[in-house]
Amino acid sequence: SGDELLCTNEGNAEISISFNGTAPFTFVYSVNGVNKSAITTNLNPYVISTTEGGYYTLTSFSDAIGVGTVSGGGLVTILEAPTSIISTITDTIHAIDPSLQFTSSSSEIIIEQSWNFGDNTLFQIINNPIHTFPLNSDGLGIASTYQVSLIVTDANSCTDTTFKNIFVVNDYWIYIPNSFSPDNDNLNDKFCIEFSGIRENSFSFFVINRQGEIIFETTDANSLKCSQNMGWDGKDTKGIKCIPTTYVYEMYFQEWDGWKNTKHGSINLVR
Image 1 (cartoon, one colour):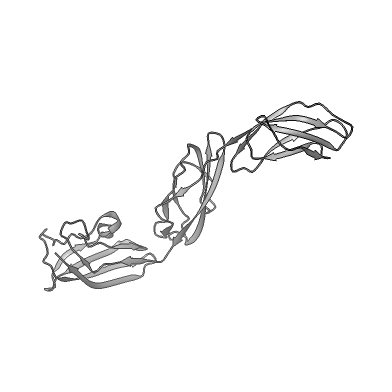
Image 2: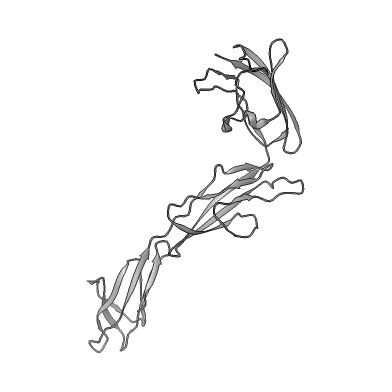
């Protein structure tokens, strides 16, 4: 008896059959008109645990004394559950800016996203949030591993949950190449860097020729960032193309915790 709605990730539906008479009971039930094998049991009621959708009907019944009567049925409806997927551009962020955009990449039509960021903040019922992880008294992110969870709910009230670890780190790294070829072939046309964990307001960068002249300089670290399609295009401060040769660079910056760094090296400009 009774109807059941079952999402595909929820386990089994239960159909309960109650008997009048004396045990043991023997019965046959069908699903959408197809009979199943006979079952003999002393249990009353007897529960059919199933993941098969369809209309369940009791087709024959007898107890220890003889043949009995049957009535009733139940409908089991199987609903496809959504798939919860968390997407981010990275799983590692720096303590200087411990914020990250989260996106639900579920292909199904989702009516609700419930986010938990694993940092003792409240659940957020919001679509594709930007979250800032906890800060210390210095205004920097607290280095840790945070387990983020996303519960998605579809129009049938089926849900799914997934988890993703986000790492907040407080170390720094910087990548500096040693050559580039600004010849407009869209291959290595700019001298660019990648970095994480530096105080961008402490940054300065100089390119110096063999005569000791500064031919390029910037205090904007992002103006050299490869991932933003930025970088030095091989022109001097007057906009004139620099000759192919080897130049020297000087770079100054502070790590997130204030340690000062100086880097020197050479850049080969090839045309």
